[in-house]
Image 1 (cartoon, rainbow, N blue to C red):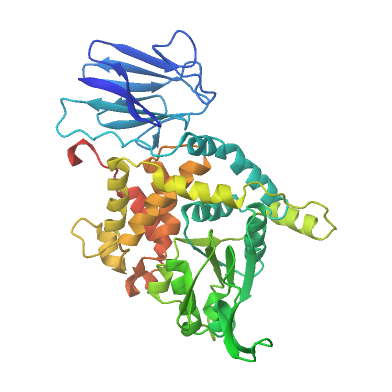
Image 2: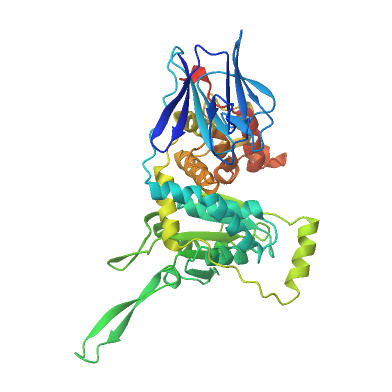
Length: 446
C-alpha cells in the first residue's frame, strides 16, 4: 500500500492512501485533495501523479519551494518510497510503500512539550531579529552568525579562524549581548597560566577565629560565554585547562570540583598566518570544538559599509532577543527533536567516507587523507542539523541540514597528507568534493 504520512508533534499521522488514486494535490486552497492552513504553503503547492513507471511529484511554482530527501524540486521528479517531502520548509510528509522491502520506519514522536514546539515555531522570527541586532555592529558575515548560533543552540564549542581585523572578537561579544549571556574574554599569551583561567586558592586569615584557611577565587572561565582569544599563542598546559571545562562543564582546583553555571560555551579564535611562537592545538583538543568557522574577507560593498559605519559615532546598540532561560530550553528541545534513520545514515555515510581505510571511501580520500573524522563528527553533524532546523522554526531534520553543517564539522577533523599539501588541496576542498560524491541513502539501503 502506497501512503502519505504527515509529520506532527505526535509522530507520523496518515494523510492519504494513494493506491486507488491517479492524482493527488496539496495546497492551501479549498480545491486540493489535502489542505494545510500554513502561510508557508502555496494555494496550489504540489501534485502527485501515478504513471506507468510509478509516482511523480510536480512543484506547482510554489512560493517557498519543495524538497524531496533534502534536494530542491524544480518541475517534475520521480518519487520512490521511502521518501521525505518537505513543503515550504514547514510541512513534512513521508511517502511510503508497505510492499517495498524493509521500508524506512517513520521518525519517532517528538518528546517536546507544546511550549517547546511553540518556542521552536517562533524561532524563525527570533532568528531574523538576532540577525538584525547583530547587524547593528557586524556588517555581513550572515553565515558565520548563523553557524555560531547553531553551535550555541546545540550546546557545543566553536573555533573561529580568520585574519586579524575580521571582527571575530566583536562578533562573539555582540552575540553574547543579544542572547543575554555573561561574557568574558581572555587574551591567550605565552606566559598565561592555567590558574589565570580557572581561578586559584588564596590563603587568608579569619579575623573572628584567627585561623588561616584557603578561599577559592573564581577565574574568568566562570561565565556563560568565554572567548579564548588567539588560543594557539599559549602553552599546551594552559590550553589543556579548557578541556575539562569544555567537556564536563566543571573546573577542578585542588580537591574541589566547581560546576559551571549553564549555559556555558567556549569560542576560541586563531590567526592562520602567524605561526612563529605559537602552539598548534593538538588533534584531541581540536576535536572538542563542534565547528571550525572560517571568517573570510568581506565583499567590496560590505567593506565600504564597514568603513562608513565605523568611522562615525553610532548610537545604535544591539538589544536582547533571547533570554538565557530560553536558550537553555532550546538546547533541551534540540535533544528531543527526532531524526529519521534516513538522515542518520547520510550523516554516518559522510563521516565514514572521510576515512582512507574504509573500503567505501572515494579514491581521492585514499589518495589525499592520512586520517579521517571520528565518531564525534557524526554526533555533531546530527546536533548541528537539528540546531539548523530549530533556527528556521522547524521540528524536522533533513539531509540538506546535514549537508549544510558538513564543512564546519569535518574540515578540522580531516588530516591531509603530503600529496594533498603539494597540490594545494585543503581539507575544505575535500569536504566539498565529498558532498558532491556521497549519495543519500536509497531504498536499497533499508
